[in-house]
Image (tube, rainbow, N blue to C red; front, side):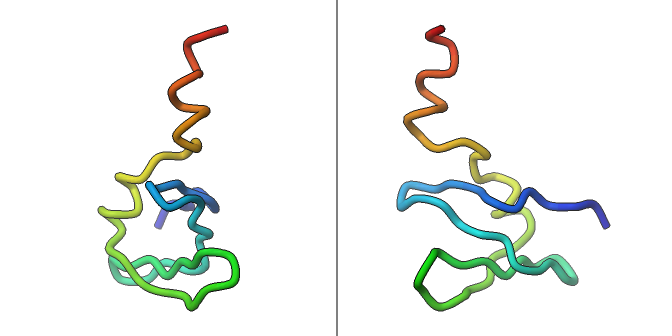
Length: 59
């Protein structure tokens, strides 16, 4: 099993990785209750915040 990135981003902000098992990832937003999503959903999330992703090519 490969190591998943520890933080991913969606439209609501950062998600912090907690654990991965049997095709599922448990993650949470700071100060909120943990929840699960599939590894496929986790892998589809961005590794950089939305603003940074948009500005990545503007150096």
